[in-house]
Structures are given as C-alpha cells and as structure tokens.
Image (cartoon, rainbow over all chains, first blue to last red; front, top):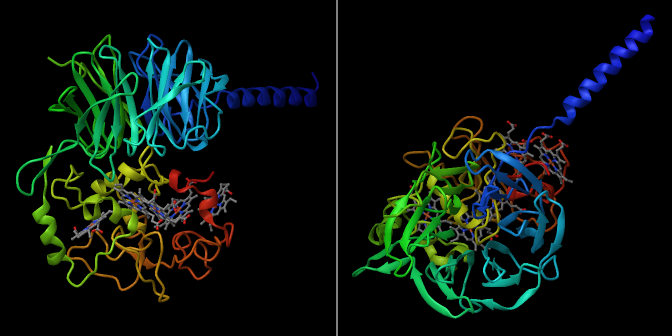
Length: 297
Length: 192
C-alpha cells in the first residue's frame, strides 16, 4: 500500500475510533432528586428537578438503570400500567410517557392545565392519579387516560399543598400542606373528597409554648400499619407519625451534608418487599436508604 | 421536635441589633414575621440563630425545588456543599432582614447586599450594601448597587464594577444584558 493511502486509512481508523468514543457518551447523573415513585418490580423512578430527567434506579443496588429527558423542572412522578406520569412544573402540565421515554399524551389540556403541579399519587384500585397543585391550593384528580375526574380535593381548604399520597387500605388521601399563613399540617380526605381529619404540625403547650412537630412538610407515604412517614425538608428528617392522631412516634435520619445525612430531603417511599426506607436527598443529589427503616414494631 | 424559643427571640433583637430597624419585606413579614426564618415552629437550628448551613436549609425550604416560593439556588459552580469554603450561599449576596441603602445613596431591591459578614465575630457593620467574595479571601466584601431590574441593563452590569454580577465577573460577557434572563437563579446562575 502506498504511504498516502496508508495514512488515509490510519486517519480513517482514528476517526472511527474517535467517533465511537464520542458516542459512548457519559451517563447522565442525578443533580436534584425530588420525588420518588412507588417501588415496583422494575425499580424506583426518580424525578430530577434540575437535570430535567426521570431516572429508573435498580431496586436492590439503587444504581441508575435508565433515564429519559422530560419537560422543565419535573416534580411528582407516578408509574401505572407501564406508563410514567411526570409533573412538569414550569410548563404547568403532567405528561405521560411509556417506559422508554416516548411521550404518549398529557393530562387535560396539557400545558398550563395546572398552576404549579407538585407531588403526585396513584390510586390503583380506582384508576386515578392525584396531583397536588401548589398554587391552585387543591388536589386535582385525573383518570389514567388523562381525563379530569370531575372533582378536586381540598379546594378552598388547602393553602400550599406540596405532596400527596394514597392509603389503599384505609382508602384515604393524605396531603402535606405547608399551611402558610396558617400552621403546617397534613390533611386527610376520603376518596370522594370529604375532609376527615388534620394532623397538625404545631400543638400549643402551655403559656408561651408552641411545640413543633414539623414545619416544612413534603413527601409522605404510609406503611399500611397505621404509620405515616413524612419528610420535613427544613428539619432534614423523616418523621414517623400515627396516621390517625398525628402523634410523633419516631424520627429517621438527621440533617447535615455528611454521608447519610439529609439536606433538603423532599420525598420518601418504602420498599414493600424489604421494608427499606428510601429518601430523596435533593441537595447532595443522592437517594438515601435506611435498611428496614420502614418497618415499625 | 422543638419547643419555642420565643423569649430568646424577643430579647435578642434588642441585645444584638441596637438602633437597627428590622423591617422585613412584605412577603416574609406577612408569612410569619421573624418566625419565617428564626422559626418557632421547628427550625433548622436549635437556638433560632442561623449559621450558613441552617440558613441555607431555611431559605431553601421555601425557595428551593418544590418549595412554596420563587425558586432560587445558591451560586455554586464548583459543586461544593454548604459550609465548605468557596460555597457561595444566599448570605453572600442577600441580607434577609432588609433591603439596604447602597453607596450611590439609593436603596437596593431583592434584598441584595449584606450588612455584615456572618463570619465576623464581633460583627462589623457596613455602611453600604455589599457582596461577600466567598471564593477569594474570606471576609472580603465589595459594595453593590442593585436598584432596578426593570430594564435589565444597568444593575447587573453597570460598567462601574458595582453590579451584582460584575463584582466577581468580567463585565465583557454580554455586557448590559439582564444576566438572569439566561442564567436562571433556580439553577444557581449556571449557563443555560
């Protein structure tokens, strides 16, 4: 082979190698995990607010298995019948994707259906999704096909709902309400929207005293045994409350930026198989695991 | 669970901030006044006093992702964590207590400009609003003028070294443009 030809071949090979290396692009990393789906056999879906992506984590190792881009500033994420529902805060909409990230449809009218969609929850038995609309001050209800169920929950009562969960055993909807300007609370509703009870964030205790239980209520979940697990982003803890009385039973985790410490945690879920408690630790960009942390005596 | 420190908070302002009017911007006042941050309702610190870490937790509970107010993030291009040297927290740029007068005789908006370095002990009070250069020498502050962002020109990049970004950044980049139109506060001013 002539030298110029050989050179050409060499350059060609280099180019191919180079472009292969280029295609082998870096896996996207989590920047700001904010909300978690329920744990499924596939794993755990995580909405990343600043990366504008949702990530699928391995159920055991919590390593990133997959991810796809979604709309601006994702918040709540729910998986139901092979579909991923993602609240896209800055577009005021909830988009529905298949498991590989192909957009399928959007709830209601799509863009600006919501003022500021935040947390979401699934009522599998009734085929409904609940969307906490922070600015509208209510929980919107949609069917899994994307049509408005025709009623909202907590209208005129909720001040600043951040997150919502559904208790499938008691068939109740539990809402984190920042409360401002009232006191923070978790408000509990029946499936048809009837208000049932409030778990207050502060209780008065004597003369000047106000005893605080929580102040910045975010993501929440229940264990089916009467316990409510509630994340307080300000305290940097998961609080375990009696689901009926709101009594504080236990706290999990502590605030800080060190290993295993929580800084601006925003959501919590329990792996029903292992009893592990998983927390979206947003600022350090990690999912924290408390082994068996979701198991209460 | 924390019990209120109301008495401490009633006394503190008189002890520590003599003759200093603590007017709050309406948004913070209307929420819970001083409690908005020195919370009696479960706070990020045990004393109601706030250091860099607890301040950040406090502000972000409302201004962070999925909080209840306008989103903002600290300026942290080097991916540090709060408390580490070089981490540019809210308190480098904002005085949570009040909008301050600046060296041009006007009043800054958006709470831009601190009144003392929270690392100073005892505190030295600055006559004019300033921004702290956390990245360079600890405790070095520079006057800042941030009066209006309606036209999006002068205040970010005034050309006199007093703008909120030009204090630390070479004003050659997109001169006289509203920096936050592209560098979103919610991402900590990262490039789009």
